[in-house]
Image 1 (cartoon, one colour):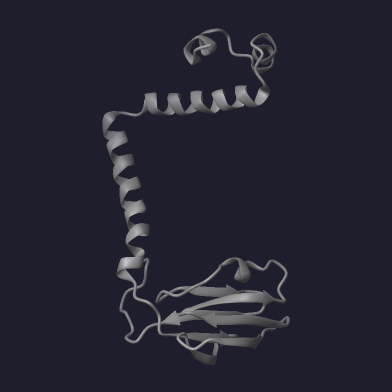
Image 2: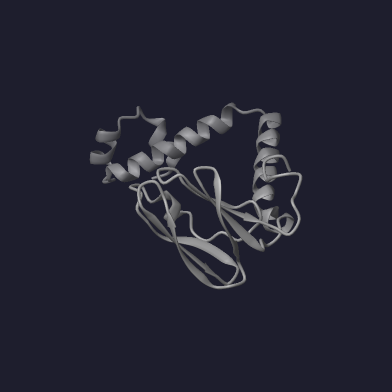
Length: 162
């Protein structure tokens, strides 16, 4: 059944699912498509152009991030805002960093750094994955540990300011 004919009748999802041999999942999917069609039908051509430009710029900034940022040469580990250690990212290492609520296990290998284990409850720092570009950070808020990648020369701008 064409989508146009389906929505031409009075729309009642439960009755439509029973009478047209459709599942409720199919009806919900069609309903979300209908909502998108309604939104785009209310937009002017200028609105669509502005939306396309914003989407292009936001996607472009993520794609160019790796081009603009350099590979980090070392990492800085801070506990409670105080410098704990500086690590060379080119030398493989395994570190046990003491946090407020326990230890954090950090692995350094192939120019990247990641948290292998953490004593915190949410494990957000572990989910962050590998970091290797200047400005990348892993933050374990419960343990008050910050791991930051730094380069050879300090940059005046970060990813937000350009």
